[in-house]
Length: 436
Image 1 (cartoon, rainbow, N blue to C red):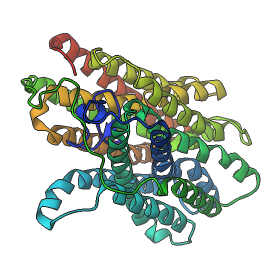
Image 2: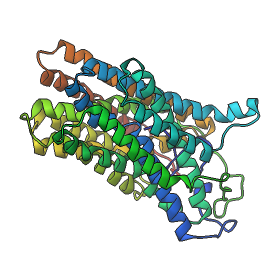
Image 3: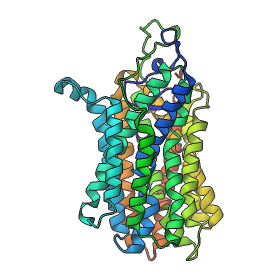
Image 4: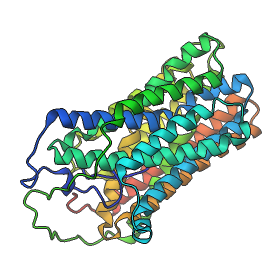
């Protein structure tokens, strides 16, 4: 997941949604609970479609594609990598929109980007049902671009609207969307397999599901951007604190990049890993991915309730250890209970890591604006891109599929522990100042 974040933990695009814009003020006293709820639910539906389906439906459908013989593990790994590369490209494109707008005389607003990205998600998902394997990598890459634009556009537009309507805290509902999308795509796969569906039929069904979610959100995403409110008591000229030491900023960027590699092996291959470890015919492998999605949704809510005065470096260290534990359980306890608990532990900190790391980025180097968070986003994306090919290479060298996945999970868990150590070193070496 790639975004810059509101200081209380809600994603938003770079340099657009700020603490001020998410705070009620005398300039915008209007509160409308019904309208705010529509905005929050529309944002949730948009992210469920673009992220839960457009980006992550590949994970529960990969075992069906392997069974149908339309891909092998190596090909599946490259399809996943194409999607992650597209997501990185989409996020960087979004960051470049202000620059493009100055040179092109304007670019589409966030509501237009969201609508266009949702249409692309429906079409690209449905096209994967067609027997055109040569173009599947391109389709997955474009789906990644669309999901990034929808994610960032939804965050910016919805959070601006919620601030204007006096309900900024309802942003937590929006970011339950990816987790809920994972749940509603993961649960039906058991029934699809039992009914003898092909992977192509699964892609077609998920395209229809994405269309239903898009239809529910469509009417809300219209009109211009919401006006930005000033923070209570703000004079409009707040002093900008000095940046933190360059060494601390470098460690933060490196540690955040490690999270991309640390989670992605499990997030790409979880059902395949479980099938390799459990007896043939077990119903459990199809349930672990929805458990991961439920953890993502729950973690999104819980992370918004953590006091902003906490040292985020220690919070990040704990989050990395939780994810490392979730990864390790797939190796050390390869049974239904181990995979279920591991899936939950992997999902719970998923959004919290992005929330806290990019909050910390703005705290450590506020003058850099989107530049520093863009660097961190790029490193995280590179980690995601590297994960599936790394797993495929280890599988090619292992004596069995189970052994290859154990090696890949071992690397991923070790990377997460290294990231936790880096955050602990930062917290020990550099004392925190006042955090926003």
